[in-house]
Image (cartoon, rainbow, N blue to C red; front, side):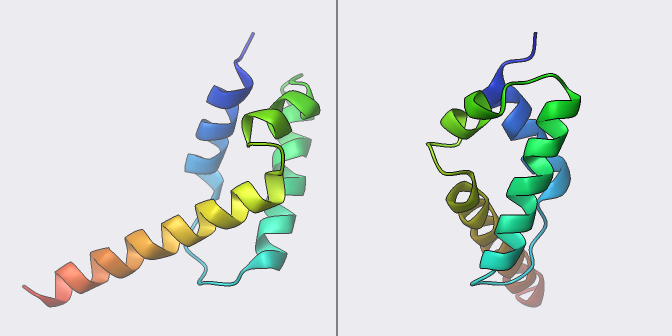
Length: 81
């Protein structure tokens, strides 16, 4: 059986892309999609939410912001060359 945290990490790696900051609507949609994927994988939704720290939407928003920060850093380092 897949560990909920491992599922969440893998799902985020595959599905969360930089979209900009203050993307609450995107985070909400990603949370819904993640829970649907958890259902398809027969992983308990409550376990996924718990793995996300208790609030999947907030977790997704943090992941989106991290992705945006990584993209800004990547572009900034590309400009320095």
